[in-house]
Image (cartoon, rainbow, N blue to C red; front, top):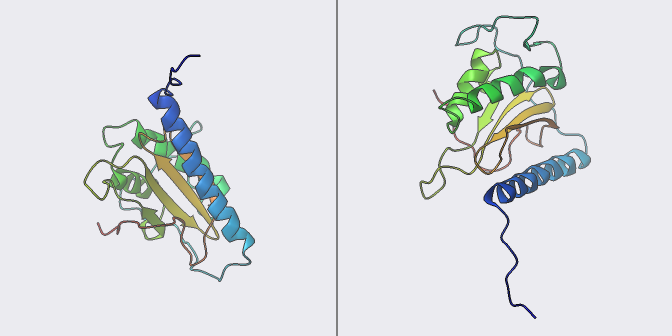
Length: 172
């Protein structure tokens, strides 16, 4: 009988598994929150009328902001912005996602973002960011533990937020 240890999964497989577990936990928490009953009315989200960055141009081939649309209708733009930042040199900076979403027309006051660094100062394994859109949330997750960027629409959680846990202030 051989006493060989089973081969360890490749790091990319482990990262995908970790990302899948994290996303699954977030989805489970959101579903449990949604099943807990009708959430208390929260603030109405109004996309900013004049974004602080460049105004996106509408093209036949690219997604655009639908200010009166649903979160699902705005998911293509949210996803495109997420993928654009992920492909840039600033892909590990939460502020880059917030700034790019604001430039695309999303309301900064309706956003949340997690910290770029762990509690001991290491780069975060993943970043999450969100935009509260009515009773729903556009949520993005990126980072080395995530693999490819993930974007979803989920119900807002009780209390009117999108992300569970500690987020950083968006004070710029």
